[in-house]
Image (tube, rainbow, N blue to C red; front, side, top):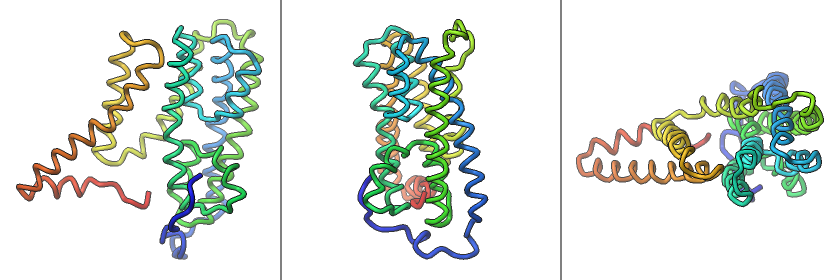
Length: 261
């Protein structure tokens, strides 16, 4: 995780009125950790169905531990994609965790000795639980409980899924590969609070769906990353043109997300 630069004001001096009971934070964290952790079973089954060995499947969950990247990798391999393209798609999907780490490093302000261990748990779900917390104590509890619960369950259910894949028969018929992406989308949707974020997400989806029939497996995910710079470029041009009229620029400013998130 990144070096701490400046702790957020809201966590350095929390208001008693905004404090959240520890039990409520633990309840929320357990809910997310258990719900998503159980979908590791789907990954185990999907990975085994794609031809990966038990050791390879379990190593992905233990060492990579980011569901979207894991599913992207085995999905591309199952579709006959080039291993290097599949790995590149999984890598670029995992890059987002580095940006989560920049924010969580400031928010959690963990001791140096714990940061390498905590970095393994910097994923979508721990970030989604940690960021809304009103105090640093609540953020640390949310991050720890979510990470521990999810990491334990995800790896256990991955093992069970990989071992039970043969008994399930045709894994494609069960549609288990859609379980983790569905949970991810459910967590992501409430975080798309501005027009810019929604347009970026929508454009990325359109790029993936449009390019699936024409590009090798795994490649559409790489191309979808272009949605962000395209939307930011268009938004910047809109802001510049609005600056001359004194109207559009103010509208863009109102749509900005809160910096504390």
